[in-house]
Length: 88
Image (cartoon, helix red, strand yellow):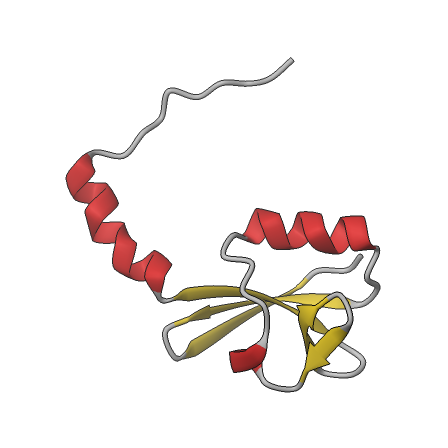
């Protein structure tokens, strides 16, 4: 049984949120090594070179499916970094 929502944003509100989404990056970081996920066979020390999942749900679903242990979800907004540790 799926829950459906009729929630939608008005066009002006949706347009005002685009700059935030354009400046947001969603990354996965391996806590013990400090390396960011870049591809299935490659990790990087640089967040700039890391794969951007674009959406939190997509990053969490991928990390869970890949069974990566000790991961940290990193969300960057412009030049500020917000960290939330997520254990898998």
